[in-house]
Image (cartoon, rainbow, N blue to C red; front, side, top):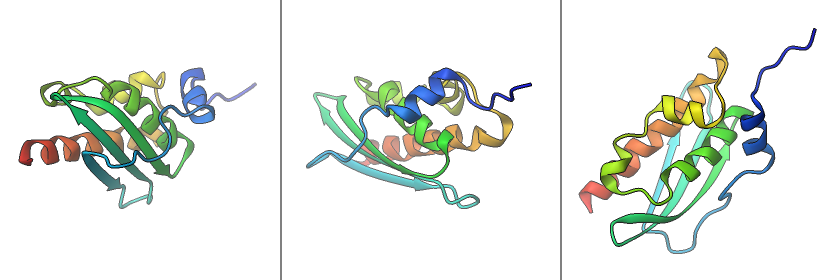
Length: 124
C-alpha cells in the first residue's frame, strides 16, 4: 500500500514554484517565521494603483511550506488591500490540494505573512 502525503497540486508547486525569487525595488518586503519548526517565508511585493502587480517569494522549510508559499503568490497577485482580508490558511491549503495534519502549519505561516503584508500596506 502506498502512503500519499501530498496532493498533486502541492507537488507541482514544490517542483515548479511560481514567482520564486525576490523582486528588485519592491513596495513591501515581508518575512515571517514559524518559531516552532523554523520554516520561513519572505515575500517581496510590488503594488501599483492599489493592486499587487508582482510578487516574489523565498522560503526555507519543509515541502509543504515551500509549496504553500508558491501557491500564496498566485493567490495574492492582482489583489487589493481589501482582498487580502479574505485570504486565510484554509484558502492557501485549498490552493495546494489539501494538507495532512502535520503540514497545516505551512498554510498558517502563509496566512501570517498575508496579515503582516496587510498591516504594512495599511500603515503606508
